[in-house]
Amino acid sequence: MNNFVYVCSPFRGDVEHNTKQAQKYCRQISELGKIPIAPHLYFPQFLNDAAPIERTKGISFGIAVMLFCDEVWVFGDVISEGMGREIEYANSQGKVVKWVGTKQDLQRGLLGGDEKDSRW
Picture 1 (cartoon, rainbow, N blue to C red):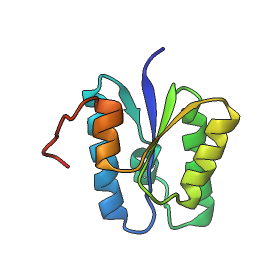
Picture 2: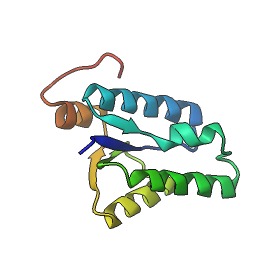
Picture 3: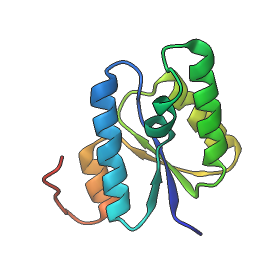
């Protein structure tokens, strides 16, 4: 097992905020010794998320990358359309899907104990 973790979190909407959040999630995952994979931080560098065809292509590319991941971690309390597709695919492939709704979920369930992180 390579410990690749697919980061499933919102992107659309408040893109600046959602990008910063995804970066924080990746940082936390890396601090656990795992390798974060966040396609929504990569593909928008050359695909236009506002263009429906390119958005669909980006989601499809992300799902293809998910095949190489060991787990899918879902962040946040709101499931976007794209996240819904990713979760559905992960479940269909028998991937381990972990739900991380809040900072406390990440700290308790994934970091273990009551560790605190000032970046939150």
